[in-house]
Image (tube, rainbow over all chains, first blue to last red; front, side, top):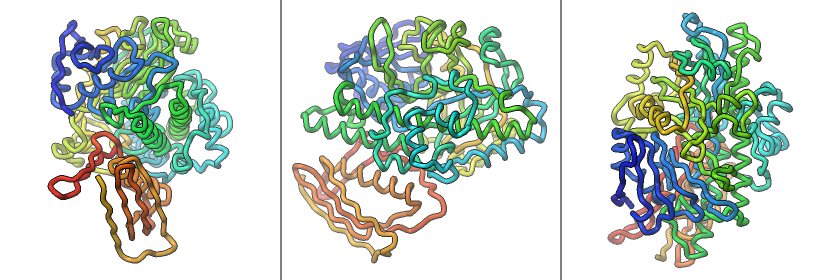
Length: 476
Length: 106
């Protein structure tokens, strides 16, 4: 239901919906935005969805809307909510269908401006090496045992047992690429079947592999700690848990929807169905979600392996010269401590952004803070930020530019051939099998990433480290 | 709301037949389950399915669907549909006709 939401300005880059605004709200909703971005939330269900999240049991202090927030299913994309443990709500809709959809950045000591015609071939070969699109074609053929081990141990299993990466990669992956609560027996046979042959595939929609040039350094010390230098080649990888994650979400929304109906509880949106985190239903979801998260980390690790092999061959590099900067999840629920409380933090379309000295960071990032990777659209710059202490949003930041137009609106305004031509004229090599997919992902279908990042920085969520400009795009 | 429907389409090719039985707490959930069943089967089996027979029963306590599907093998699964959601799910009678809505994640 679309209802008017009374919203108050609470500073230059912050807006608040009071918990007294709507009778069901248990906490205020805080939206981090500037005057232009806040207007983009006015015409759809984004704010309604954020205030609906504030009705979930156990919600702690506030729910947060990132500046790239937009309407989702039940829970807005770009929403963050922390629930008091042990019995606060866990909602699969608050994690999303693509569990542990996330981004990783690799850098290589190569100046992309000097690649000349080789750039075209590199993009072509990467497109061949990384299967894209919906479905399961082209993925690694895992045995059922390999799949179970991947669900249990994530990146570690595929590095140590399948040879898909370097030991250092684990330190540079959020949570070491593995959530320990994973129990493969909590994953349905349908989900397992969907995931069996999809490891190492990009998927469709907004997933991509992009080649970038390090365009500018904002914080030389932090950039140096992250191995980032001016004019380096960067590779951004955006993918998730594929059909397996979608099936886990589908299975558990269904279970929680039925549970709530049996208890005569009506959620504000059925996709926002929930269960107490310490209930059997809640624990079953958290276990299955952990499996899907581990699968997603393993998937991005497998894609990284294909990227490293291809770049090493074509650019005569050693695999170890192609350094993983970091891998971040942006659709996940995690047990964390904030303000001295044990909380279950839902981040749906939001990136963890822990500051310097946080115990969950590897030693090499202890002084800089966690690398926070913010992809723009395929025609605009992307950012590397670093998390800051005192983050006001439970250690979170935005996850990208955020959609300004729905996919259907984008398709009605842009053509794939037009987008392809425009990118090519800007010197960006594009490989995408679907013109329709290109139109959906047109740069103008997204908010202004510079503006979004500015709001993040001004609210003390993260600090700028480096800016990247696209030179090659491979879309799912 | 109570109702039932039977649909029969063409004759099945036995080698690609799938028998499906779904039950849900209401007609809306059954609609989402049915779409999700088709998405999952198509992705796993690499087939496009035609429903050759379906029985649907809806009453106050829940909804049941029994269907026979006939699959046509395809080289590559290219549908953008990834899942049917429960967001904005609708199923009801409007001026004597069924009206249903399920939003899919793509």
